[in-house]
Length: 165
Image (cartoon, rainbow, N blue to C red; front, side, top):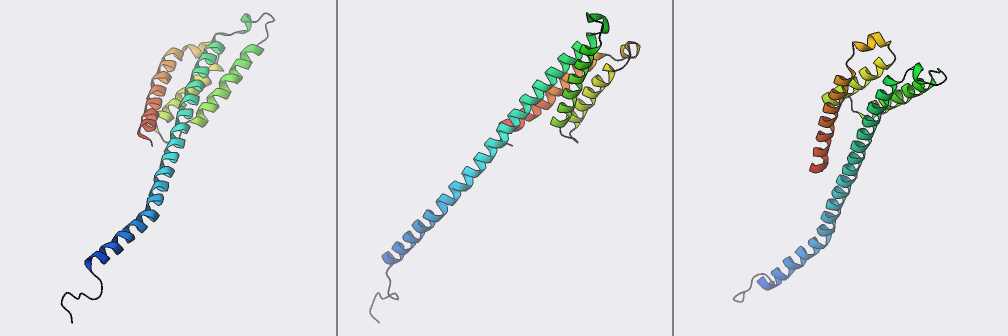
């Protein structure tokens, strides 16, 4: 055997083969990694946008609910020119629709969201009671608690948006 014989291939040839193999692997793996990263970013963006829309929808629904229930509480048959209770009933119908919309926006089993739902329906249920029974219910305290709990729910969701969950 001649001196320096190493089985037919020299070190330089092995390096060329290894380099070509790594380049071929990079050609295949690079786009796959890019695709994976792009899909995750798109998904995170969609989830984040959906969550932002949910936050805005909940905030709008709650503010409209609180405003309309206050209007309905203050409206009596005497406030109507024709002594018809229709405007009050229409307001109660709007408030009821908003309460159910809020209920459908909230997730069951999350403490703050469950409490928010309970408060909204406590407020709604007192609209149909007689004035004497209504005096026992502190609507302002309930509205203050709704605002406090709603802020907590919205803050938690904003944290999720910021973290990309």
